[in-house]
Image 1 (spheres, rainbow, N blue to C red):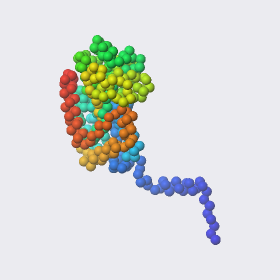
Image 2: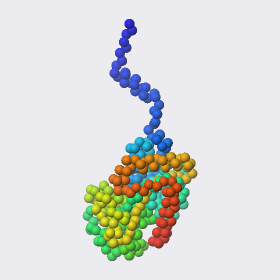
Image 3: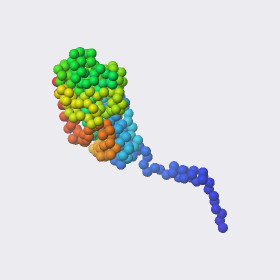
Length: 330
């Protein structure tokens, strides 16, 4: 009769571990996904905490939480209102492993920074969201409503600096300029202080270095809920659920302004690569994780892909050029 070989629990565990390590994984982390997109990197053309950054990182988290992909890298390349990042993207011709988070701000910055590259040089992938701007002050600001702020602004525009999380030509710049025009102030008299994203602007608003700030609601929702910031108005035509503030139009300022954000890829990628990226973002759009992100951040679903998004970009380019010329800024 043959003897029984006894294996200690430790030896059995080591044997099992070796077997696992010797068998190649079916899917390596960050190397594959259900859409066929692998090794994706997302370029954010402004500083951490800005609108493009928050949108990109929220989208990536929703993609990964939904099991659509994994190991996606997000990196920041700020400068010149997003046109430094835009130039990098355009120079990466044919690179289907790179996409860029962008929006209305980049459209305007191309003009005001005289960028050699434009969004017409990119491959449109998808528009994701629309987001109203907010007119916001610190909790201890002397301005408790928009009427008081406007009165002080009109009396001494230079002494009431407004900060925005975008360079001239971006949404946080266009919104207060349109406000100024609506209340009878010349845009050239506005003391506008640009910041590279809402994250940089926040410290100046809280510290009273600017009289008021204009930025996206999603960037400041936590500070608003904590009572650190007071919202005087929202720039959209409708109020924002959960935010106790009127619209500009309700406050007697005839401005209806909404920002938007989306994703573009480098020029020269194949149709197959473009379609894979569109499929990834379409799957993201249909996920419960993304829909919850829209609700939590106060974003409006504005999903649009491919050629339709390309036509929208061309129309926005013409619209922003007209606005900048009207304001004497282009």
